[in-house]
Length: 269
Image (cartoon, rainbow, N blue to C red; front, side, top):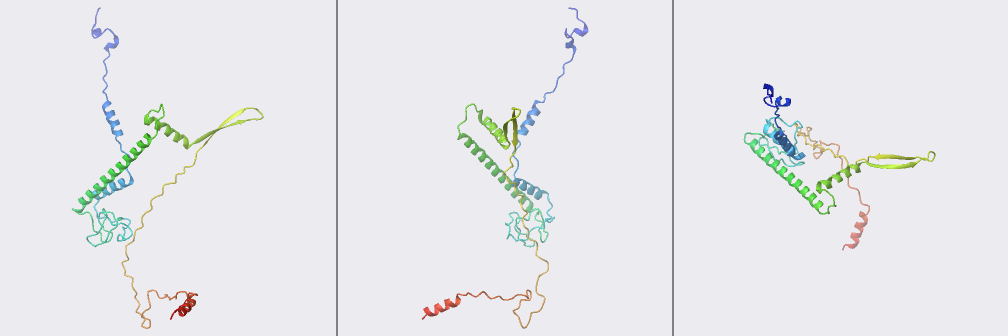
């Protein structure tokens, strides 16, 4: 066969087209899918609150006061603070509403000193890890109880395992949320049959979740001392000048008291 320079590599026209090599991206896709599969369950409100508290203790200056004014109940209406129960500067007893990253609501002393901040960070981290472990154990217990409940009932023939048994249940639950029915009617004039479909959506019986109420905070005591500024009355030294309109009201008389006294006299010696 006669060969030419353009047919030296092959006898077909397509042999002269250079092959293109596309890079394979299977590994990143697998890693991305693996990363998506490792996404954990949603965090609870307690975990989010602890994470927010940890962030504030780590990065706050500690000199700002609580914009809500703090609480001056002296741990009488709320629990004692587990982080800073007492202000070392003024001696104010702090309840759990006084957060550790804010300054003392009375004297403005910071609770995040050079030695106090690392101790608070370690304490909150310990509480956070304990809360996450507790929720994980509770989640595993619920899953184990669900598995035991599924094993207590025999599987129907043809059911494709647990996933196959769960899918019809999910479809049935979705179908049960909207009930549909058909009405067959016969027209007496035209003698024709009419089929009408009706779908009714029931109102959800689950009550809306109540919004948590803001706890009551005790305001600080007044700066001025309330005392009686008038001199006492020499004729009535026992008179309460702070409440001058007080009147003594004797207790009501018992109508049967006279009869009881008479009976005591007759029984007595």
